[in-house]
Image 1 (cartoon, rainbow, N blue to C red):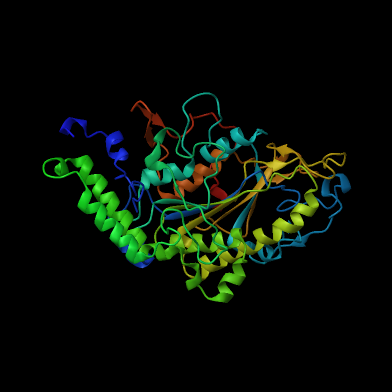
Image 2: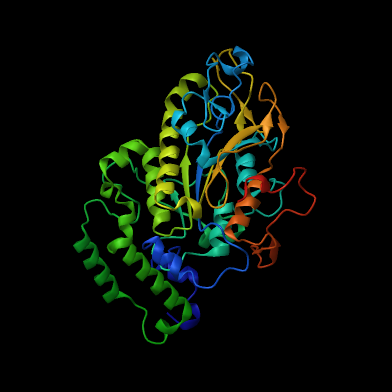
Length: 441
């Protein structure tokens, strides 16, 4: 192959781009020491765990119940549990109620968009889907702006277990900013992560395969000295180290004590929360737990009876575990979906007690990484229909997390054509009070 033909497309055709996103694992104490120079802005957090409740969690059935609003709104549940900070929560969230001093409850979230795709884009980029450039989600911006924590052998951004799919998380930043989706099911032993473990192929056989690949590699001589070839070789080496080295043990949940795994819950969601703790412990910058199945148009009470206990166990165990290990102060935990559900229940067929999409008012949690726990930000009216106090726009949350991570709001991002695009929305575009200063420590 002539030298001038060594394009990225050609190299991908030779299968040498494995691990191209492996930008970033080792004990966190060493990683912190390896961070080196201080960032230009103060940094309160190093990592983010995003719990994405795909489909839209009903705020009235979880974090903002309205027991006095009548059956058409509370659905007959009508009971609440009082958290340690005095806030009322669903009685299906007892562990989170007991840990309310670990997180801030966001009850004023609002954007008014009722479409899954457009609302997901809005919540995760802070920008409306207005036909302009396709902006990256917050996770892609974090990994682009901060990169990997030095010494980590894992990707800077990881999604458990499948990417969200409602929009392109990387936007115009493209493949280098796209998170690595593990696939597999962490509730099963072993946790078979796509690309790390080939079913039926042991480590010795994998090593032999890589040695064979090295012997038949057609690139050599002057071609091997080209920067692109060297970069891809380094990426392949990083991928090999992840597959065959100790970094991949981050996904070995069987190393955890049985009582720890039980505390998280032996469900896909619960064990994903446990895996997320192990990943940030090893220095992964941004972990997304993508939890599907919250789009409850029908029989929402029955659905909540099944889903909320899993959410309660997984998130409570995650917050408690991070706190006990000294990781919560440097890890932001962000829990939300794309919107809430309609306050008034749809009793008629075919919904039979369901709730529709509702972006006018919804709830979420924010914890760790320089955010004070035990507080409630925002409020809705008596039926949960409108935000009556301290509206919170998606950018208020994203901008606040960026501030805690030390990311400058004046950051520009390289567009698809190479032009620099402003990351933050234009001044005056938002009609809310702004960043969540009331919970920043």
